[in-house]
Image (cartoon, rainbow, N blue to C red; front, side, top):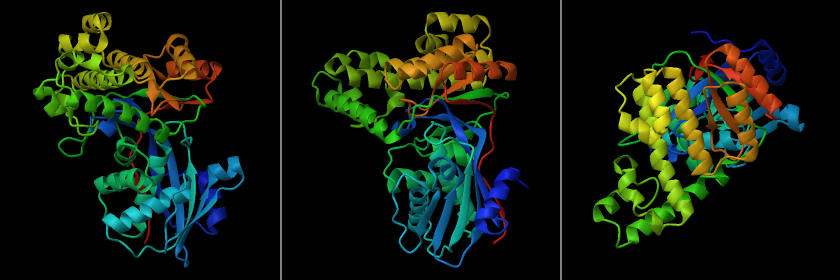
Length: 424
C-alpha cells in the first residue's frame, strides 16, 4: 500500500537530505476521547487517532549518528537541527534528540539490536507541540516504524507501541501512560485495557467529526501526573492504615493508584470512609471511580449493548439519563453527554481545567453547538476535543473557539495508524 506525503514536505526534506528520501514513516496524533487521566492507573482508556500526522523522511549516512532537522522548530525557534551520537545515545533533553535517543536505548535493551546505521532524518509534523494531541508519542512511534522498516527489526505493531511507551516513561522519565503511543501505533478508535495484561480492541463506530481546539496554554505532563498520583497514593495509604476500613476493601486498594483494583471498588462502599482523607485525596479517588463508570457506560453504548438505567443515572445524573433513554440512546448525543460529564469531573474533582479552557469550552458548546466538549490530554492548558454532529457544525465550533481566544482549531476525523515505506 502506497502512502502519500504532502508535496511541500517532500520538497523541504530533499533540501535537507541532499537527495530524495529513501525511507518514509508516519504516525498520527490523537484525541484523548474517554477516561482521561486513567491509563496510568491501569484502567481502560479510549483514544482516537486523528488525521493530523507526523512524517519522517530519511536517508542513510556513513557516520554513526542521527542528524535530525525538525521543520517546525527551525521555523519557530530559528534552529531545528539536532544530533544523536549512536555510540553513546545518552540525550534526555525534551527535544527530538532526546526522544530519538531514548528510542535507540529502548531498542537496544529490549530488542537486543545494536547495529543501527547512521541516518539523516527530516521531521515534519502537523501536530502542534505541547497542545495535548500526542506529539511526542507520534514522534516515537514514527521513529520506531522507520527503524523497523529500514533496519529490518521485525517488530510487531504491539512492539512499536510498547517500545514507544517505554522510551518516554522509562528512558525519558516522563510519568505517562500508554494512551499516546498505542493510539498512534494502532490508529482508529480503540480501547486500551491493561488488566490482566495490555490488550487493544478496535471500536466500530459511525464516522465521527471532532474539532481539536488548541487553547494556546502550554502544559507539561510531568508537572501534572505525579501530583495527582501522589494525592491518590496518600489517600489509599491512609485508608489502608485505618482500623475503621474493612479488610475486604483494604485488600483491593493495592497501596498506590497503579496497584488498586479500581474495577472492583464501588463508590458506595468507599464513600463512607472518604471523610478520613484530605479533600484533594478524596476528590481524586472519587474522580477515578466516576470517570471509569462513565467510560464503561459509553462502551456499552458504542457496542449497542443494553444500557443499565441505574448505571446511567449514576454516571450521567437523573436528567441526562432520562432524556437520552427517552430518545433511545442516540449514539452521537449519548457520547457527547459522556464527554461533557467527563469534562466536569476533570474540572471539579481532578482540578486540571483553567479559566481560559472554560471560556473556550463554553463558546464551543453553547455558541458552536457542539454535542460534547472535554479536555483532551493532561489539562492545565493544552487542547479540548469537541464532538460535532456535522462538518458544518464543526466549522462553526472552529470559528467560535478562535473568537473566544483559542490559538487554533482543526476539524478532524479518525486517522490510520503508523506506516513505513521505502527500501533497505
